[in-house]
Amino acid sequence: MASAEELLERLFTEGMNGGNDTVVDEVLAEDYTNHSFGANGRDAMKGVIGGFRSAFPDIQITIDERIVVGDRAAQRGHFAGTHEGEFAGMPGTGKHVTVQFMDWWVMRDGLLADNWVVMDFSQLAG
Image (cartoon, rainbow, N blue to C red):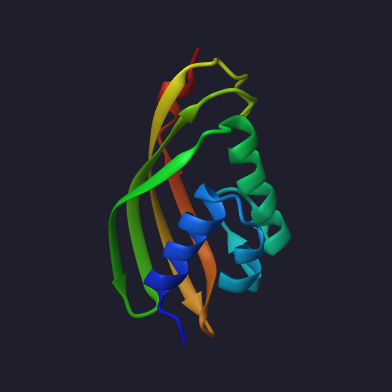
């Protein structure tokens, strides 16, 4: 069985950075809940990823620090990309931005099941 660290690495490297939606089905629980974005289920998370990739076509996410203890994981990182499309109600600006984030994950039955995210959107303001 994969560890939370291995699952997160796949989700961010293959899914978010690589645009591979199928990895979502392999690392997230069927009843996955993102408590911050209101994304319930794998398909909703695919929509979240699609929203990021649509707004920031050149998005690259970097995990600056990850701490895993048993079935819990916390990450601090940032994403960088060109803000081309609407994101979180803000129209694209064409600016290259870097957005800091922190998130918390809970693993259940060998898959990522719950997630909370905090982002600093201050760079997105026109």
